[in-house]
Amino acid sequence: MNGYRDLRFDDFVARPALIENLRKAFGSGRVSHAYLFTGPAGSGKKTMADICVRALYCTGPEESRPCGTCESCRGFAEWQGHSDIYYLDVDEGRTQIRVENVRNIAFALSDSSSSGGKRCVICRRAEKMNADAQDALLKTLEEPPPNTVFILCAENVSQLLPTVVSRCMPVQFSPVGDRVIRERVLEGRVPAQDMEWILELAAGLPGRAFSLIENGSQSREIYLNAMKALTFIREGKGIAAAAKAVRCDKADAQDALYCFEILGRKLLKNDNKAGIALLDAVCEARSMLRSNVTWQYVLDTLLIRAAEG
Image: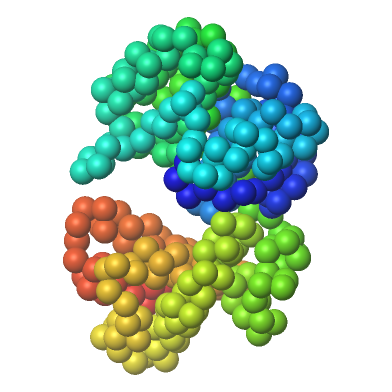
């Protein structure tokens, strides 16, 4: 299992009711045939999917699954995975999950389970399925193979067919409060002087907080430079000076835009017009990047829009 971490339900940072419901279902094996985990990047959808799958195959005491010590759990820890787990993902060199990917998994599911137990299909980026792939998946969800559970993860549920969504049990992953991030993620891991800026950038998302801890100095620099660029605009120093202050290339463009988004949300509290202008500029910038517009042009345009607000 790629990116394996030996996490349990008790380690997960989310609403207690969400954790308990999934613990009971996957720990007991009394699961629905399909789940749709939705929420922003960093909310824990993919991590929870991995925990649920390990609980489903764990042979330890029901109340402590995944136990981390049984043969199945050790297999995950040793990167052996499980023969009855299938991953639906984008092929290397492609940008979408295609109908062929779905049909290959459907064909594999037509055979009996190698262990005689449950089988699991995980799609960590469900919105990457094109329309034909979603149609093919819908047919499988409408007549699901026996003893099979699907876990789909998506940031933007609007990119999925309503009929696909309706065939799944929805599980919404939402940001948690700053106090929870501070107590469950930051304390004991970062110096006190770094907590405030990490809390601001994490915006209640545990996964984002862990990422900021791992890439702290670089993330902090991008955030401070974005703040400096907006200060230059307010002081009338011009777009060129503001763009130079950002000091990042296209490889860090998404991180920079995320920082501008957080700053835009902060602006909303004191200057609604400026906050909306910056958030609109960030949305436009992301769209331009997806269209392969050069980062320098994207950045200049964002700062011009921000200045107009």
